[in-house]
Image 1 (cartoon, helix red, strand yellow):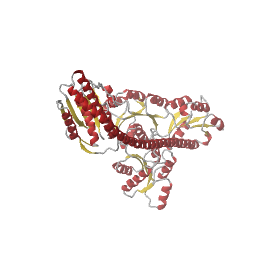
Image 2: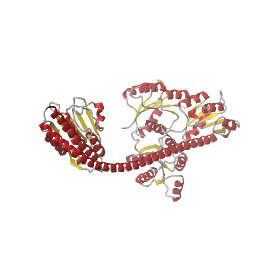
Image 3: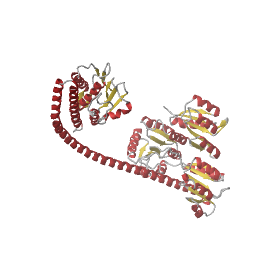
Image 4: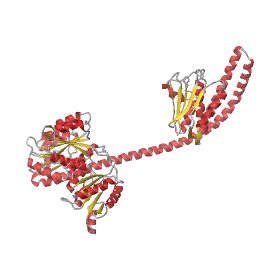
Length: 637
């Protein structure tokens, strides 16, 4: 779905100019000539971006911004203010009121669109590669746009090299396609300037040419183009070469997002209106935006709400010396690294540099010299910022590599520990088997004689003998449980497709044969299967279903439900239950929640269950409340 932009300006020319630029970029536009129309649009329309003129015939653009920010449906919209560069106080009011950016008139419509796209941050086409097309032929631009859009690219267009550089600065593209012959600077010069810009130097560039001359091809490549395409060739060639250079650029070092891109902003602090106008035009040609301030107070106020990329200060300001203003700027922590250039009428280089300026330019050397110095400082500043980001990225990668090495060492140590534990488990099982044999012989004697004597004895003697018989039986069950736990810890599990429904039915049948006097309603879901070790999972069912059987002995109508849903198996009963906040204690060795005399058991059955499920890569847990039964869940992966 296309983004919608609200454009509010009393000039029909401005409205239609922005309408065409936004519409070409895929936006839907809503046009308003004043505040009254805009307020009506607030209620009738839903928009993502608002471009507001500061001065309107029936109201104030900043007041309109305040009402937009307070509106329940439009408070988060991206807002750009339009005004002349001379209106410093309107710029300050707008930024303080909540504007996302300020665009000075005269403006470049494609730059406004690119800035709006960047500020949206979550544009619907953000997952598509962004291609900037620079060509003075409207027909060819539209043909190329249709071809690229049909191939899945997002396209922005510019009609001249200067305009294209400003659009690229506002929103760096993934690739650039530029015509060799353009009004103003030619395509080769555009590419050279791109290669000199640290923020754009890695952008793949294709140059369009109508020439078949081999020398022209060499000149194109020498200018820094990654490839060239002859205009007389099929546009499929453009798509093929574009895909090739994009594949190549994908191997470059990925840099973290540096935030919303925009043209570099240069703050000019000077009381001379003519000089400001001249410098604004020259900076505009280089793709920079000039911010004008005629006094030190305005400059400091502007820097407080919208830090610039470079500041140029007249040494002879009316109310303060330029060196003092430079010193005050340097005292602000966030502005210490911003380049400051002082312009003066005499030789004050050393004193200006001592005051903290980065450069000094004599006014007599002309605006062109100052323009070159500004360009050099901005280029150096961008390069430093890119180098810093590269260093940060390399440090991040090194940390990730160190973490990976640590994880690998941990995995190796863990593997060694697992191997050691496997060996110990085998030893433990062998030991357990030997010990169990030594224990079972006297236990069988105790069980046999206590049972025999209990049948012949009466009164208290018979009662004591039955207690001896019961204790010996519990000891025998404990030995079985310990052997089962030892087996659960041993070796690799043997996975196969197991019919868990049949397995559960076998377990329930064994319980019925062992306790034929019990009438327990058991429901088993059909079609339960899993890739697992059948012998081990049988032990899981034997323990969990056996517990359910045991804890429903005092329930009038005992029932057990065995089923599954979405890969999770469950055993649910309507028995005694337990406090839910103590569920984890169940799986600890001998972690009883009930009196052993009331509900006898070994105390390690659920510990064995947890170990078996862990070895299958699954999870086991329980839910219950006293008197309302219990449900045990487990997964097998």
